[in-house]
Length: 349
Ligand SMILES: [Zn+2]
Image 1 (tube, protein in one colour):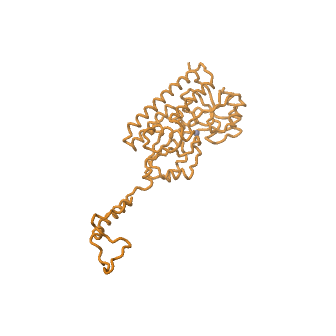
Image 2 (cartoon, protein in one colour):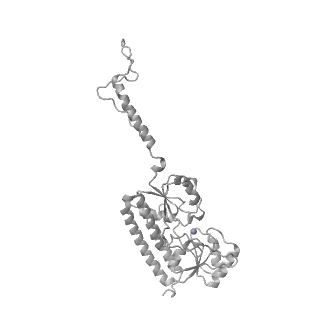
Image 3 (cartoon, helix red, strand yellow):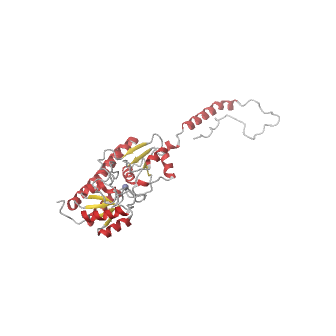
């Protein structure tokens, strides 16, 4: 910041701009002594201003308290932990209506935001495919919090049967949809709280307190899921893709096939026909899809096999300013919906 020029010391005189010399008095050629005395001071000020300009933080440093969240669920968790302290500016990298970001392509403004971000929270396990390329524009010392650290994972396609007419889908990679599980969400939030504390040590107690509240709410949801499991365990379902494997496992539901051969890859007619056969043969009770799935295929399959189609919200999208307990609300409404959809049975008792 340039400083204003200092006022001349009291009593010092200096020629004013435009002042004319008195008649009969020719202008003095050497500068007045007072002015000469100001020159070193002006040089010091100039030097300080220059030094400050040279040392002034670049734009990236000025945005150092920004945290970019690579997908909606980790954005929700990070917002929850930051709430009340607001040391960080938590920004979502994707459009809030994106859903699972398997095919998300960052817009120029998303990339621009990433170039100015020193901190990033990601779900991890390859969910945010776009990060592979997008991170090339990020600052080389960007601080990345991988929320998946320590989360017990399932492999993709766990429990799926082979669909006649379509090659078997095998995968040895972990299913990245870990966020749709209160048990996993507790671990993910703990990873995020640890990372935030590292970057904001003075806020450690705050993040610890918020994490405790979050985990308490997850424990309540886990109890509700256990209660659901008692009356509904053993149901077979088909899902649109592997978005709810972790929740299904905790609920005791068996996902035997997915409509899509891979996330956001439409099924062939042969696959749909094979799925219809499986649904009838194995006694599948429902088709569960996420809000962004192609409903027409699920409905066709459902009407052909006479089983219900229902929407399970994985909390991968929503408002750009959701309530702080939005994740908890979504999971609870999923549990309530599934309890209505699937009649109580005796399998879990
Ligand atoms: Zn997905």
